[in-house]
Amino acid sequence: MLTTVVRPNCVAYVSVISACTEQESVYRCGELLHAHVLMLGHESNSFVVSSLIDYYSKCGRMDKDVTLSGSCTSDDIVLNTMISAYTHNQQGEEALKLFRKMLDENVSLSEHTLTSILDACGALTVLQQGKQVHALVIKLGSDYNMFVVGALIDMYSKCGNIDEACHVFDQASFKNNILWTSLITAYAQSGRGVDALRIFDQLLMEERFYPDHVCFTVILTACNHTGLIDKGINYFKTIITDYNLAPEIDQYACLIDLYARKGDLESAKKVMEEMPFYANRVMWSSLLSSCKEYGNVELGREAAYKLFELEPHSPAPYLVLADIYAGAGLWNRVQNIRKLMDENGIRKSLAGWSWIEVDHIRCS
Image (spheres, rainbow, N blue to C red):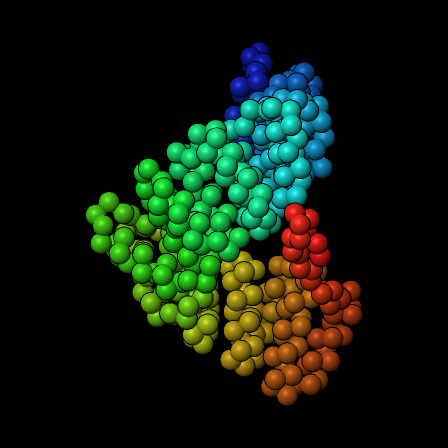
């Protein structure tokens, strides 16, 4: 189009910018499109600005999002998109601040915004604020939207209130695969993996229930956490044999973790080599941790050096490998790892922070 006399309009730019977030090969083209938008004077169009905010948020560039939103501070569409952007980048506190501002200014709330703010409440485990949003959902009549209901179930389960999550599910007027998956996830997240598997097995006998990739990821994770390793491996096999689905990278990651926890490190490594994806840091970290538990020095070394490449500034693989060497009595190798950390400027991370809520104030 750019080589013709036809000039792109706002609709064209929204479509093309959205495409940049879906394909890694054109991911960085969004910045060039942003320049086009500025040159053609479309920077005041709320739909174009929203698509740019979505693009930059998926790139982790919240500084750009804040700048863009500043030019449209009172636009409903832009503000709703900013809520999603903050939540996507795990900036729940900022999402809640903006949400309160929107309520004060009577900005119309989309159901996607309600879903995002419930996700933020769940991530921050702020139960009281989550309950207030739940009340707002009922007031706005959005409790019939399955995505909002699913977000409510997820929020309550992450805040440790599985009974309320079940109540929300029971009150739902229509229960589809999404809500059943949300309920199974709620049980799994609450440490009740056996109950999650029981519900799943019951649903498999229902003719209208067809588990998708998300559901299988939850089930495989529940098997991991409950120690039902062989059951999880069998579930993975049914993805292909019974449901004719091609396993995605998340299901492969769960399978690798299942084999690794079982101590079958060779099978875990074989899956990583044969699957149609490149092994990521989560998979190598899982393998490395199990190598430490089962004392496999050589495979642990291979996993650690892969992680040195994938996350060069993380001290974790260095420390785990040093522990593996120490457990095997290889003290010279322990010294070499410590020397390598010094050479690469790697320092052990400081202790983590914990947060609690006291009188509606979050404290560390």
